[in-house]
Image (tube, rainbow, N blue to C red; front, side, top):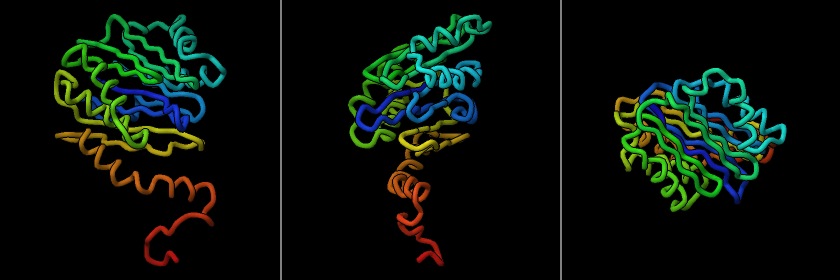
Length: 224
């Protein structure tokens, strides 16, 4: 019911994930990222604990491969889960259990991985990686390009209704955490429009958190 793309930006050290599903609020359950550590997607009959634990393991210094092995060691429901991890060095790892739903697929690039289940066809993740790698502009926008590339290649076997974008960088909170939790039509397009509104203000919001004396005007009544 889900396809996602997770990556590390080699220029900024940011980590991010863009994700979409036929289920509501997919990003609330499936997207996990920590600044300086990595990013994890936990999807297909989702156990959010796996994404959280993956970040803990990578924070302890484990690579994506080692963290994945540790996650699944003794875990009783791995057959139902689908996971993708990117570590602090851009290493990637993924798992698709034998009971993952429908057509599944995965594709890997340099510091990027796309995975999916209930896909229109197994080539969708490769189209996502290619779209991400061909895109230009800020890292979050390139992640969205990957998600859009997956949709253009067929996406899920049925219509999608939710989408999300989560990006962490050099502060302990997400610099972007945008979600379309339900849309009858085109949640990925709605997410792109949200990003286009948010992008020009992103750095200002970081500055406001770090040092409000250096922050630009909020542009609201009463703000000098």
